[in-house]
Length: 320
Ligand code: ASP
Image (cartoon, rainbow, N blue to C red; front, side, top):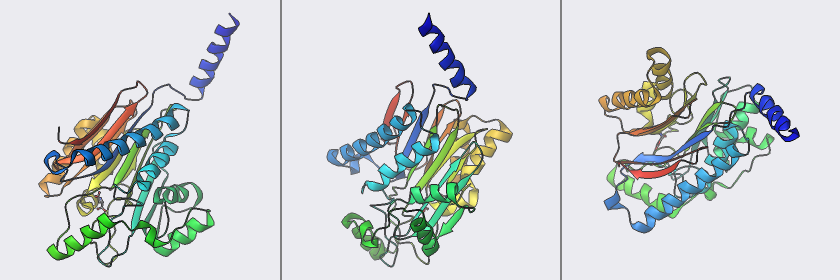
């Protein structure tokens, strides 16, 4: 009897604090020409394991009562530290042979957001974006100023050579020879619903291979590459950023749900349709407050995965 009362009291407290047992998390690791015939079994295995590991990290945060933004930061940090993806270690090179990183995060409970753009020495850009959101009066900081701010917050600063990877450097040479970008992305993103019913989204990238003139893409732009609103959904994008900026892609998905009452899948499909009309390429992951997940793309593949409190879990790469 005593035990029953205790459980009852805990349940009432949990409910009154807004807690629910349900949570969900989805990730992407970039969209592009990701085809089974072009990937060795060994490489597929590496990507699969990296995605599964990131899901495991996000799941542990949410299962233990962490918030959605904590889950987004921890999950993306894992992906940034993995050289397979175009974010953090493994970022693509600019035309000048440097690495310039962008990241953003947004909370759906109060629409607070943080972003950094064009940074060269912050080990984990998503952590810096979160610091901007939580501990500054601004939404977006760029370049040297962003690094200066990161230092004041005690974040890990690295020598720019930390971001060098042989594979990405070769991609730059190839792109320069062909005078075009290689259509294989690798930006990372995460959307999460926590046990308190709150949504958050985050995105991190090295941008586009061979980019020039301080180019910034959609990933650090709130409303373009990242958006979250508890009333609708959390969104993280990957693809040819210029099109995502022009469409106000992530925010438009939220608007389609808010004004046209589309569900999260319909809204993502409609936005991808708009992208295709402009001849843009890429993908998106989104999650609503009921834990419904959408993962849409118009490229041959997108590295992606999700996990739910029900134990349901999946990882995929190709257009299956
Ligand atoms: N959207 C990123 C950008 O344009 C690139 C990507 O997602 O692959 O910077």
